[in-house]
Length: 404
Image (cartoon, rainbow, N blue to C red):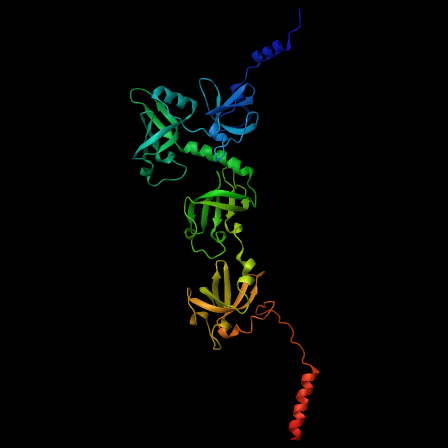
């Protein structure tokens, strides 16, 4: 009796070790495979272990519509569903398809596939949606990840949903959720964002909400906060002066704090200011000593008045420089917040971010020649000693007066 061939042994192994369904990738799992073919609408991926997946070609294209991958390339993606007829895994971020008739809709429900529907009305507790000519209901809590105050804004829009409840019969009962799809998409995007998340990283995001203390930004499945002090170099009273909800922004990651608990999320501090040019780098050039400059009073303190000369640059008029020779007990005796003023630059210290000013317009003529600029309060250079010649001249003059 001849020994079994390798092919016979392989068949025997497959029969005695059938592929377990428990080991198959589930919806939401990250998978890795090789592109084996690319068609006009779909591409097919060999996932190994006799498993194959289908992905929309649009997922493989960049913003200009060019393919980012070719046959033979290895790609990483996620399982979004399963074709019940063929058993093929559906990959990528496939959107809901239009279905026709109750049978196709029921098939989508059993496979967990997203369906496309049109919001037809805002009703009590949610919205009414038409799916393949069947009236369905989506509760308000399942319409979006965030609270939508006016659901009527969605009427007429075509959106993707997942069927969470299906009851057939003469009057089918369908309950939908858009939130679960958005959460899945957010989770997948968050994984991709975390892979490139580190202090100093520059990311693109969308402003999601504005608070008195800062702005929240979605940077791709994760949300970070820009503190009001990190919005700009200049003084900002409220984030709405610079940003609006829905605005795309570019931010720098300042720091990342790990989650405080198993269900917590990392705290991500962001900055727009970190990407802007520091105005103090050119302060000495733009505000030379002795020059008269214009500004506006930004705030008053017992020791003087701060003048905004440019966004992010404030100069200080010390209280002793406010009265032009007369005594001033408090800056409010001379100035009010918001007043336009002209002042003379007395000194610039770019490293300490300080500019000293004076309201006395007579001080500008002889200060312009000082190089380098000296801030008031810093030790002045020693005055040169008088020469003997000068002293001798005075002595001779005194002797002449005594003889006359």
